[in-house]
Structure formats: structure tokens, C-alpha cells
Length: 87
Image (cartoon, rainbow, N blue to C red; front, side, top):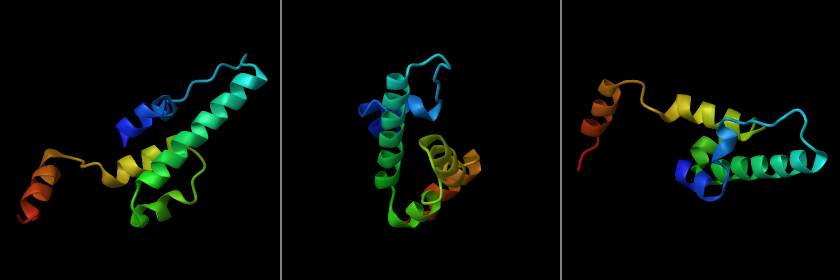
């Protein structure tokens, strides 16, 4: 997912930065790119995880939620996942 966001120029929204002195046009462009990032995350997920994202409002919230839900917390959990999958 990270690489898809990078390809679309949207990765910067995971750690958003917008100056308070930004013009209306810059804020509008920022919002459009932020929406693009959120939709890329949403459409990149399977249906099971889309329900988690449906109540969120932006890419940062979505990324943090998915990171909490899907990213392994420790090496033991990663190793457990590897060995639990049968070939």
C-alpha cells in the first residue's frame, strides 16, 4: 500500500504538513491530494477491512488504524504467522 501511495504522490499525507499561511488554492490542492490518498487506501483493501475504514475521514486516521490492526507487534507474532500458513 505504501508504494501505491508513493506512486500517486500521496504518501506525504501519512504525516501531513500544511502551513497556516497557505493560500486557498494550496489548501484546496492539499485536500484533493489527501482525498486521493484516502481513496487509494480504501480501494486497496479487501472488503473485510473496508468496513473498518468507512467511518474515518482522512488518510492519516486510516493508515494508523490499519497499522494497528494489521502490522505484527513482535517478531514472535511474525514467526507464528509464517509457521501457521501451510504450504
